Image (tube, rainbow, N blue to C red; front, side):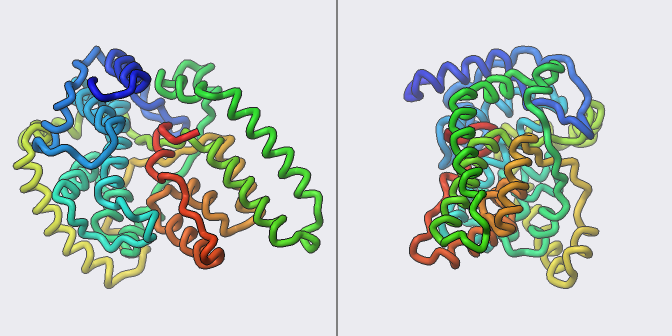
Length: 363
């Protein structure tokens, strides 16, 4: 683990020993599974091997997370390991295929980075209608991108209840407890300020007053929505059946990058047909062309409460919309554009959008 800070190294040593995937869903919920046997900790070259020997332009933290997730799924193909791997693939795909999306608020599709098609394909193998992969491939304004985001299922989960019921993963438990008191104290302070500002009648509120209320809502969202996640509405039997169907020609897809590249080319050719279909029909018709998605985007109940509160105050609140639909959704990008146009030169870019993914956001 040379070169990594001691804190990060310690975290992933624990992760390598336990390999605990993301927690199960509430309703609909994947089945409970027998804990995965201990898998080997990936060496620093593990991620490079899985990507053809080239170091990806991603953080060391995400690189190790990728290696751990791939090894876990290779050792035990169950729904928890699959949804953990899907979440990591989404983060990698977003990082390498749409690195400037939140700076320029545009993405036309067909990314130039050589490894991008490979990770788009890997993501689509796990979730054929994945919105992150399709938006990276076709562009944020494409009909299929909008259709997949429209098609995404949204639900909530209660971290404390999952802990009490014993269904929360160790990753989720540790993440939920991290800075818990500090977050609670800061949230209370902000909520009290917001309550005081809210006592002013709407017609008497000045521009600075409204701006501060918007800022407080954004700060509360960043505190309370740090643990949003992606899960799959599947059982272990579903995952096993998928593997049996693909085993003949896809069992070595992590190791054989040349095969992955050829498959990505075929996927790109299929994409041309889908784009033509998408250009001819509206979203409702485009939805008919998409495979059924098992993906569920979840936020905590407390996060959902703050999203609703922010949108009640300002229906165009960009941060709330981004947490509600995802940071790589067309809805989020359009909301950020509207915010930029309204603020003009005073518009400030949001924090690194890759950070509020799977619990690795900044406090």
